[in-house]
Length: 557
Picture (spheres, rainbow, N blue to C red):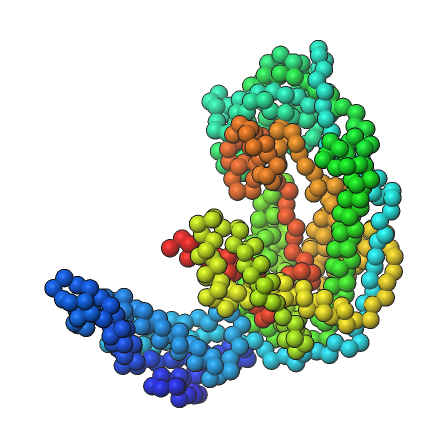
């Protein structure tokens, strides 16, 4: 049965739904209240206005209202709605899970009462769990001299130099410096042209068949090769199409011998080989420390999840799931067989929805623990987060994004949530009884995956974690491509030479492939982890993206 509540002043609130975590209300704002706001604003503005035929400050109120009436009414209405929502939340001690859905009744016009329909979901009441008795095992990986030497060797491979050879046919592993012009049905296509392009045969950087057809080429030779663009190529006009490339070879280069010594380190701007080893040791220690923290966090969250089961707001779960699903869809598009990849994730859709629910539940638990124990994100930390997030926007839009987050508590909470979560996790780790054990990196990774296996719905993310670790171990993510030809399909634009021709610019995820360069697709991104790093803290659904989307919408206005 609807429950009428006395509002502050003439506003009236009627509760229409109170089921589980769902709440709904009708809120009536009298026309007299809105009119009073308009009259007050007119009186404030009139003394400051100037109008021909009137002395300064003597413009009649009725003329002010005539000139600015619609804008004043809209502002007064919005202010009244905002205050009404603030009172609704305060009077009913509501803790909205997401931004309430507020709609103004049809047929509203100036001079009538404003009737609002408000629906929302509230956060469940959770008692902060006891933090005594937490026991964690910390698996550590000592960095050996052998692993440092391996990293030095990999680094040297990445810095490989090439020496020009005369009258020698290009072989696998050689670098070919050439010009090329791509043609589709005999016509040049946009972006398929480059000059002075350095291509390493066998690097796998270009589309299948391109590099292999350079084997046997000599300096001064001209040849035409035929390739077929992949079916899922980024440029629709090229996907699955057969194209030719007219190639002019300028030089053939062979890999030079890289001697790992102090001189090699000095070429990199360092003082000595020992300094290089020290830097690489630091990188390895940082990587393994990150894996160790992941393993400890997994243990911690598993203990929390095992001891708590409560209803979570469906809108939060849906928001979290939509973000996971969008990420998976994007990754499927980058697979060799996108349709098969989509079918695979579609078959596990229910599992991913459970992952989303687990994340939200863990986020709410961490939020309660943090609040109960005085964990906070400082104003200085929040300012740093805000400035970092603003960097994703164009310079002219950054200030608007910052203003938006500062004015919207929900957006600010979502931005703050990842750091808040990390601080709560660190707090709990400090409080736990921790035992240490030395293991190998493989054993540490296996332990992380074993923890993931205990989460019944976390099969898919486990594979991504293993792939990520394997890539890091192989040194792929630390690669710095200095040759223009290799940069042509690099996923990171910053690595491309600054003054290279357009066709030699790196292919990025945001459309460079559409220029027709013979580039492979960028590597798929990491798939979502069910219980590491992404749980929704501070009572918010997935952080980071929600405020960005809203700000983008404001920017488009």
